[in-house]
Length: 358
Image (tube, rainbow, N blue to C red):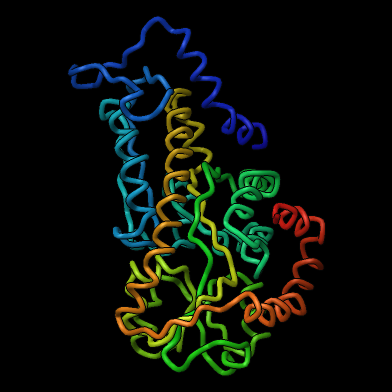
């Protein structure tokens, strides 16, 4: 599996160079129509295979979310266009094929080709992924991107490939997470005491919110809106764009921009499925995925920055924590889940990730 993952990282470059030496510059669509120029789709991979392939790609966010937009424009349209329709990509947003955990299991057993998965879901089977969500691990988006695109992210992706048979085609963003609730303003750790907060299943998140005095309640994202409406939980924590695009703010009265945890997503593909494809299809998928995730990061960053004012305009009271106000939240993290993380995964791995802070 290690060899397979390393090949994935280099396959785009190798096949693109091979294509440059190929005298046949065009790809003829299956219907015999006009030839396909890869450059028209922003890619360099030359495709000559004509195998018919259907790829199902599942995820939990709504069609309004930047991840969906990036996937349509840079992945679905590119794969279908560059192969003249020989590759078909079926998108299943809004948890149509089940929760992310169910999508992960479907990929493991060969019932699903691709899915977007976040670190909190993957950590259930590759525990080291929990560290992506270690509170206040990274001080900026640039630091998080550098770590995930570098040694830290490669370490995690290799373990996913080796231990689960799922390949990470690229790291994208959900962004830094913020807290909403229906009860009161949250400006200090004490304000969280007694509040029932939906969290992801990452055990470090659960420990952190327990240390803050809250009552962490892990549940599937697909269940969250109803839980907020029915007051099963008092609040939740998610990045701004997701809070807006999934209308979570409609069931909440208060929002605190705490930026306490960074959440990443992977564009994942089942290794057995990927390995069964022609080499040029593999290269095309890898290149399109890389472009998709780069575009997704641009879109999500802009959305996370712009949607806050719209949430506030909808009547939600917004509190933005200053660096000084974040300090006691960070101290509690260091006294609780940081110690657990170091004992469980090793301080060296935490340092590898944190070394990218500037």
